[in-house]
Picture (cartoon, rainbow, N blue to C red):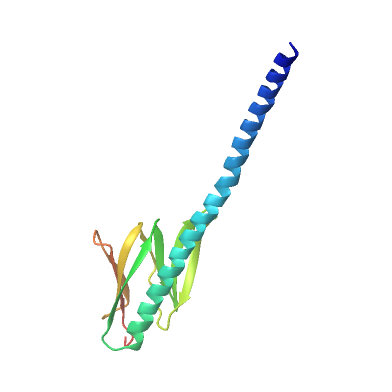
Length: 148
């Protein structure tokens, strides 16, 4: 009879430890997963910002040139050209976060929202300053008019 009590006691203690470990383990993994996802989103925003600003600077400093670059995002994102900054916004666990990159040429474009995926960003000289997205083609045209 003594062995019976010890087995029941060990079974109850083991069950409590298993439940405690399962709850603790999920709480430990979730913040790490969120941090990794946030880091990925911010990395994509930084890379996209740098690529777009380099393309704008390239078109601004050379005559009659067109730069085409590819940006890729695993979630929806926003683009804004504001003064002399390219701004890309991504949603992370703390809310919307913006990443900035300076450009030599700036204008106000408002906020443009895009879905996830790869986009061809085409920066070219034009008659006016504008950002245009071609529906269904995942192409973003940024036209700058340094002379106007």
